Image (cartoon, rainbow, N blue to C red; front, side, top):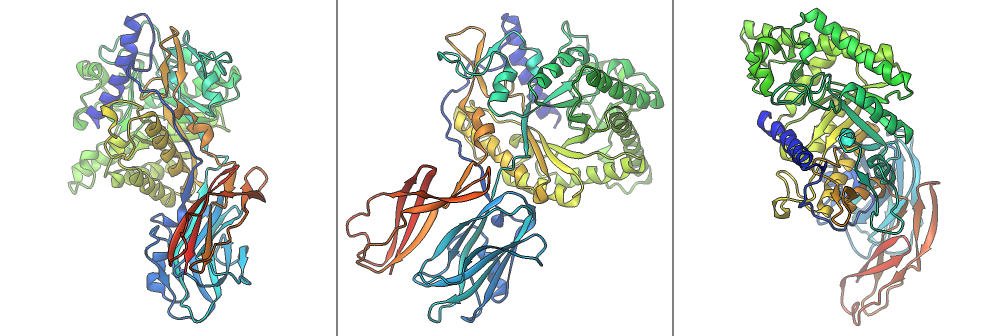
Length: 631
């Protein structure tokens, strides 16, 4: 992680430094692609998730086939007797499930059924009643609203003739919750104070602007995180920077700008004078030679003191991160020699200062060691680290009791076990010291942290192991250019504006799909600077505009949910009877109403022979598909 994370920060700084030398601060690379993005509301089939399961009243060994996401496989009951029950357990409750799609296994059968939902598997609410159905149909879409749903049960009360009951798919769709907080780390707003940002800078009505925050809020960002360096220093030399950007005093102004726009405020204490991440966690120079007890007190005093300044000026943070990506500990001291730390250069070159006293670095090299000495060193490092972290947590509680406390780590690709060991050790030890965070957070960059499916697994494992905590994705990003458009490692998304939107939206979905609504928020990391969502406007100096991908913040939430598929059965040679309207659910008031649908023309002789015909219909709220079974 040392070289990779070093490259991430160095690349970002190179863009900024080059621009400063030229006399213009330009966080977006000149080669950034610009284009359109088609962004649909998030819709996620929770039944197909790896943690969902299915049980059946008969035919139990094949029950999973009804929720495997593959319509070519089916669950079949053992016989034709009714009723037959199939129950999907989603692994936890969800507040924004809105649609159930049922596809039966066989064509030309009249299925009579009831669909119910439950939080506990004991008390059930009916969400669809087709127990008196008389029409042959292979499936249907049902809209509903029931917060807290974990179980969905399909009871087939009858089938025409002696048909065997079978289900190809039961799909249960989740939509983006209102309370999932979407935002960004926009700390570099401090560096670009003189730049103008507009939604449409070349139009007669330029839209929101002229500040970065104006565009960010207009495009749907709700929460802004600010990183705080103790005394900003050059990462190579260790000398104070000429302008102390992202330092405590300048960040007070950034916090005011955020709160002036009624946006949520997050504070990310690096407890360092330069970048802190999994490969480097240097002590600030002012604390470098403190004895450990004094270092602990310094963490408490600095944290609480800065929060009191924020509160005094009317900018109470909503959330505070005690450390940044601290999977390997923080505030490294003399233990850095055993860790093998090589970054930042000043920390190594001035080891006599920065590594003179113990700090909070973790000795992962001794994890699972059976050597008594190594195990003792492992435990002692954990105790030092959690003593420092507990001091930071306590300072937040004492200074700002309503502010949530976040602990932010990573799950490196294939290293979930390490992160789970971190949470086990950390939470056990800080609670023993009388402290406890509110939020467990991770970063997600696919090139380092794995595929989107791995992200799903990581979030699910953390959430189900620690159900009493909120879960955040504190950092994520995806480029809109580079590599000839080829995806980043571990990602299916091209490096285009559309791919950027899809990649970011996939992270929103992952957080939203965490069981029991534990997913609390997602922050995009520096969308105006690193893997940017903005570009310089060639026709206007010192002016920036957003990529279309930034609309992912506003466009990911469904306002209306459509009955987007209908299933019709007809005899060969006959014209199918297609509905003139379908249902739609308006999420603002949970009202279900009908909406006209206009079907494309049926091709000549399309139903002359048995088979399947698919037609597309148009409504004011989107497309509908008609699946016509010709028998």
